Length: 505
Image (cartoon, rainbow, N blue to C red; front, side):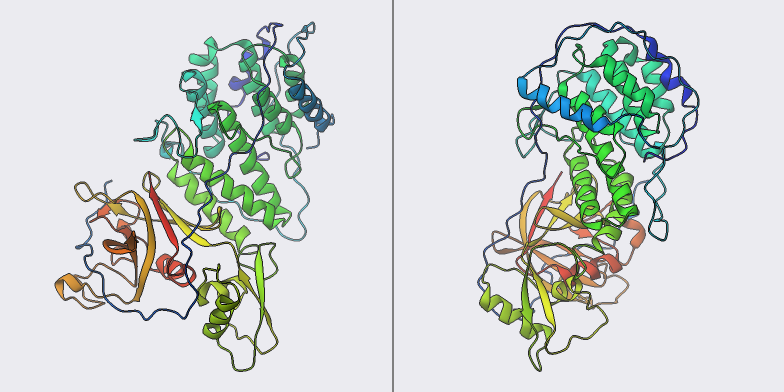
């Protein structure tokens, strides 16, 4: 996001002349934030089960939804930070020089040269779409053990406003917050930190470097935040982005800064066609947004999902991608069903379906031939449905491969939270409870049905298509997960029976 044009940026830099102190700040551990690994059920190998049965209970007719190059080797600074962090504290440096002078209009930093063509960037979500409140029902301690520091409310509010400014490419609210609002009450070092971070994002590297030199060792900022500023000074596409701690108390501002740098890295890596690293960065960014202490930004997640799709089309869903696999050589007269059964006999730990083999090897719409070597994914396919974001995340292991919009249960018929597995998969499903065949105008199930099993038993819930695509994204169902038909058709093909589905909020 480093090269975008920013309007009315001057006001955001007014606070640069504030004074700083000279006391020490304790170093924080730098570790990795990753999504929980989803381990699917250990299924015995065997042929595809015969599809039988129909949805025991399904939705009624859907309701209308409610409405340029750095002047300094900043990597050296990062290396210095690492050694200082290892020592447990930063040196208490005196700041003898005057604060940086006010900046002129921003100059966009150059991007890495593209091989042949420019990668189209999705339009940023509007500022009005940003949900800046705490996630509904979010516990103080996150499911993976992360504990966000709720005692520093200023940091949490600033984290959301900073992230919003980057997502929407509209820094006006950040400017007001820092020059007229609560930001004026923050320690001078933190004000300098935010100013330097934003300058680095828009290409004002020299000014950002001055701020970095001025705030090291001062109170009001943590070692993690300073390390993230150092990373922002490095050119995108080659940053060593520090990770916030994987345990203990998490600083919301550091989390927001890390997410912004990950998004900037993901975009730059896509531009130079480093699809594997780009896909991992997009995946991390999306899952971090879902686990943050604020409400998820739906439009941003779906926009990032489009960029992820491009990267994964050349990575996890490409035969030449760098992903864990098991090779199988096609024999004479073998169909994909035969190849699947043989792979399962040789590797009983696999969880695969023919559609996943086809998609992973670029065989959609193509033939395979005897002697071809096909790659069988060994990371288990699984799904996360986030109810607050109303998004379906299809993953291989803990890496997101695809993101789709979805509808969820309306008031009084809320979608249940928990862990499920995929049972029967039906094409053109009838609505059995009312005796309505597929295609009947009162049958809302759409083109596909994937049954959700709870503890191995049938439930009344499933993932299915819809006859009203405008309802997707709202709270419209009787508890099922509704997807657009084209999306559920794609999920249907690549998600095996027995795959784990986690529904969360």
